[in-house]
Length: 249
Image 1 (cartoon, one colour):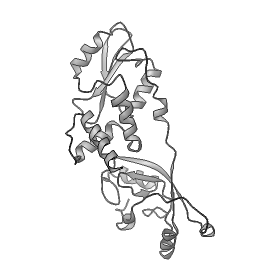
Image 2 (image 1 turned 45 degrees about the vertical axis):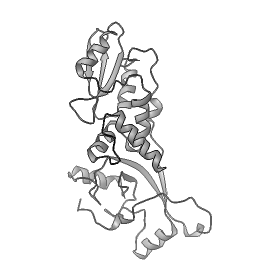
Image 3 (image 1 turned 30 degrees about the horizontal axis):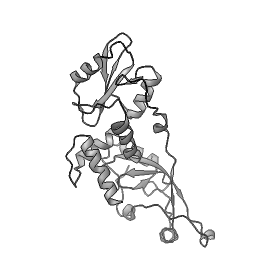
Image 4 (image 1 turned 90 degrees about the vertical axis):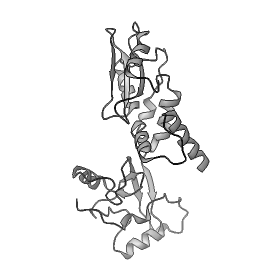
């Protein structure tokens, strides 16, 4: 498993023109996360966009994209996408308009998969690098099912001794946890995360690690009446979640 993860990391680094080393610097990891968001499907999105998609042109510059698309000047809807040379962690999409112009744009506030899908539906991105077959990305932007975290008997008993429950958000002590921060794995409720970010809080409110993504989760409480029945293995979580109390929101 570790070799597979190392191979994937190496392939992503090489594919993006990043130095291939055993240690991936935080900046490289941050850029990769931005390019292939969301974090939970990062590897899949990398394979879709940077490995198999015919519209990916890697390291072309602004002028080189215009030159490449010029041969499709009579085929409106032709497009390619590349890493932005001026904005780290962002994509640039070049395309031929119905008037025969070549424009380039940087998608804002959406993933590249969503931007390409929206552009296809609007008639802008139809022919990747002039080819007639355009990959269907609709399945890649479907919301992922919520991850269920099962509370173990040990966790149940520990929190009972403290007069609390595992599923209760430890910041507000009012709502149940429903979001997991990536990659640190800490759990809290959506209102607390939103309030923390609105107050310009930096990183995770528990450990201050950089937030590269979030994932919706559901905590399944432990039922003492069913403790003798076979249950699924609990998902992993951070034991140190409650070691540090977040700043007042």
